[in-house]
Image 1: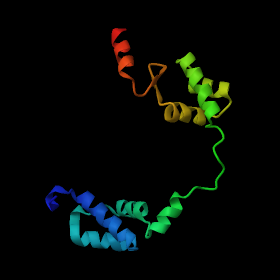
Image 2 (image 1 turned 60 degrees about the vertical axis):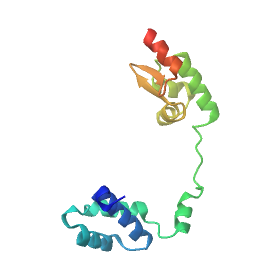
Image 3 (image 1 turned 180 degrees about the vertical axis):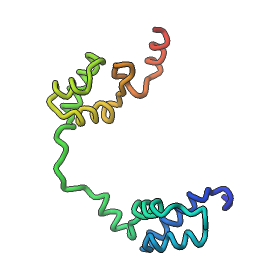
Image 4 (image 1 turned 45 degrees about the vertical axis):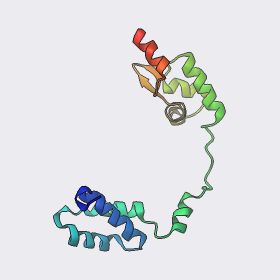
Length: 144
């Protein structure tokens, strides 16, 4: 791939990642980018944000961030609650998140997270429908 094919912003992100891994401070990275790219340089906040994103100087630091945390475990998003919400939604697809959360006894946010993230439903015309329909479901909808 030639240098012409890579957009300036992508090239700058690559440079920011490389220099961040070498432990260079974001102000110095911005100075170097300005010297090379001139008016096409990413904005200062963007450079600092990318530096923060790529800011691990060693693989050990990156591993520490990805380690299991010792925070309080989730108590609302359990298999029992997921199963109960699935039964409610399949029984009556017109239920609201507030109604579901009160029936199951969990918070609104947890109920919404289960419905959208765990079960993969979204609201269409006041009904909960699967986000990805199977071929059979698509044919059924066309026949209606």
